[in-house]
Length: 217
Image 1 (cartoon, helix red, strand yellow):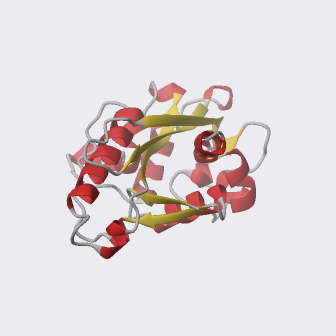
Image 2 (cartoon, helix red, strand yellow; image 1 turned 90 degrees about the vertical axis):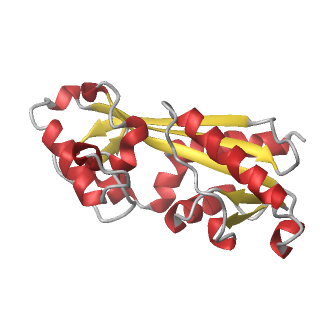
Image 3 (cartoon, one colour; image 1 turned 135 degrees about the vertical axis):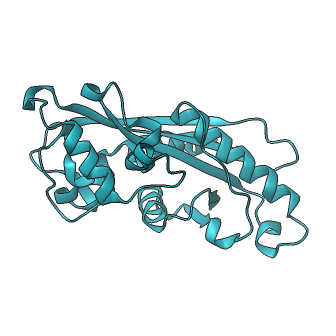
């Protein structure tokens, strides 16, 4: 079994990753390492943020290996991802600012609520016709080993094309899911359910590439 330490405290994200990867992978999270270093996600793109988080956690874990029983058991791999929504009519926004889209208006440093982000997106898209509401979810995953000098970082990318609806539909998923309808479907991610979403999402495509990486070893 491959053990991964995922650089997040987002339980929904971790559950999605574990479901997609399956029983051959065991996923730990930052909840297992309460003192793990916090990383400022200030890179200009998803890849930069994912790599930065993966390296920071890998270095920290190596430094803690003598004082933490879970760390001693690994050494394993660190996985970090960055993902978000890119809207063509907004020149690719919110992009790397997807989680703090609304907070940008007030100079806030933290993330905005889902309701605030969705409200801002709908407001900015109010006058965009249905035929021009193209968008995609994009995910970049960074993988590196825990060690004294984990400079080897592999990245895996996935994208899911679709469109932005004029109002939210569905109670499933999280974030912008109730506003996003993937190509080939008439239901949003908020309506399709986890099983369908996990088969075609941006994260599932990036994770599929990661699984293939381990399959060829």
